Structures are given as structure tokens and as C-alpha cells.
Image 1: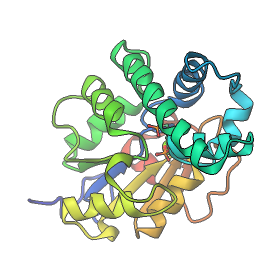
Image 2: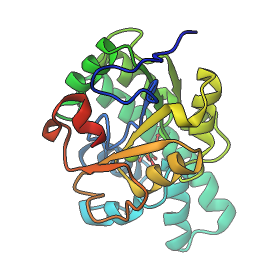
Image 3: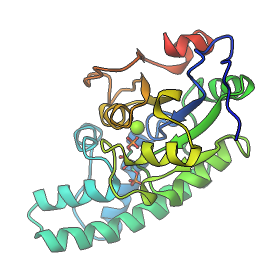
Image 4: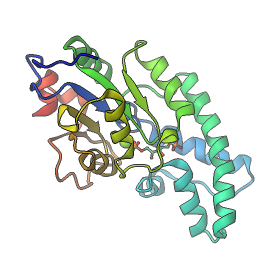
Length: 238
Ligand code: XBP
Ligand code: MG
């Protein structure tokens, strides 16, 4: 595998690879995507729970849909074992529903993302994905949103033992790229994602959204409110 050792004119020489988060970063998927699928799964199971947009924002502090469900159900008085079992079946149904939404084109990229990815690819930067999301919907989402072969490596929450803020997913990406952490830049939208990237030794740029705007991004290389606010590749870093 060969690396961009000289750097592009707009990116520093250390930046051989850019590793993107998915939820909230490549796509605005939470409030009008995952949340709706969770609520439809509750309804289909005959459960009275519904997550409004505000409550879902608080629940997002727990990464991973299945973990989020388990914690919520335990908080609603379901016993530990029962909550875990119910969370597993609800999450399987939710995943199928969200995958259907992805396949119908209902989860578009954030504005400016496709342009940025195109610029990075043209500059010879290796691209990868590190997400907590489930492989069953992540891979079809990437396939329908980006050109084939855009990402050299994709690691999902299905393939790692611990989810963000644990660094496992970033470590796995670096291992598969055979790249040291100081040669890669992470792009994240949340504090949990930033912590995961930093703990794995990557530099990290944060592009916030409505759910994450007020989180603590201490340690980020740069913080932006949107992708379209960037001035090309250099604007992403600085
Ligand atoms: C994303 C998540 C995921 C999604 C739902 O975090 O935590 O759980 O909310 O997807 P990040 P799944 O953007 O930091 O990777 O239901 O497939 O987990
Ligand atoms: Mg995210």
C-alpha cells in the first residue's frame, strides 16, 4: 500500500488518511432517521415508549442503538436480563426499518460532504470510516451515497468489542490501513467520537450538528458548524 507522503497543497504532510464517522457526520441520521425507526419498533412490539427529539438527544450520550435501548428499558423498570433480551429484539427490528429507509434514499449526506470527499480523493488522501453504527445499514448507506471504492477501510460497531468513546474502532481502522495514528485525521460530530479518536492517537476535527453543538470538544484540532463553511481542504484543518 502506498501513502501520500508529500501531502496535497492544502493538507499538511502528516495527513495520509482521513477517517470519517457516519452518524451525525457523513449523514444527518439521528433525529429523523434512527429515532423514527426506534419508535416504529416500539410500536410494532406493542410497547408504549416513544422518543421525542429532545429526549433522543439526551439518549444519544449512550452510543450504540442496542446499548441505548438496554439502558432506557432498565430505567423504565425492566429487569436487567429482560431489558437486554427486549433490547436485542427491538434493535433487530429497528435495524431492518432503518436499512429500508437507507435503501429508499431517506438518509442523505450532510451538505458539503460529497464535495469534501471528492476533493480529498483527488488530493490522493486515503479515506476510511469508523462508526458505532451497525454494519447491516452502514454498508448499504455508503454504497448508495458514495462512488464505489471511495473508502479503503470501513469498520462498523458490529466488528469491534467496545463502542465509542472506546478507541477500538479507530485502532481497528489504523491496523487495517497499516498506518500509525499520527498520520491520520478523524472527522467527528460528537464528544464521544472525539474521545474515541483522541484515545487512539489521531488528530480530530469536529463538525457539529444540532444535537452536539454544546458538547465539550477540548482537544479537537478544529471545530466547524457545517461542512459548507470550510474553505476547501485547508479550511477543514484550520
Ligand atoms: C452513532 C451511534 C449509533 C446510532 C444508531 O454514534 O451511537 O448507535 O445512533 O445506530 P457515532 P445503531 O456517530 O459516534 O458512531 O442502532 O446501528 O447502533
Ligand atoms: Mg457521530
